[in-house]
Image (cartoon, rainbow, N blue to C red; front, side, top):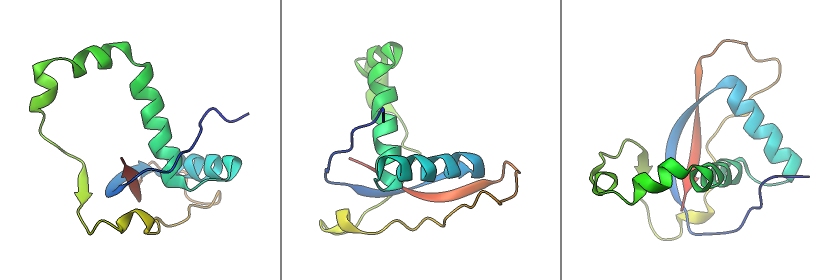
Length: 108
């Protein structure tokens, strides 16, 4: 039974880097729950953020409001929520190296 439930929301496009094994797991989980890989990343992060009590306390602090953003968000028009993922498929035969793979991610 899947641990994540995927819902449709308004998205922005952001660029993230994953190791090849992690990218493969994201693709495999996406196939398992029959959802786009972007949704797997989105819901996984929301799940972790909600479960981390220390992080929830940090969010209430003034320090959390003074962060320097490091996520590369691409701003576009309001209809960008329907854009396709720019990520390349990762096959099981890929090198076992820990070389990061660029993947397009989304966040609400």
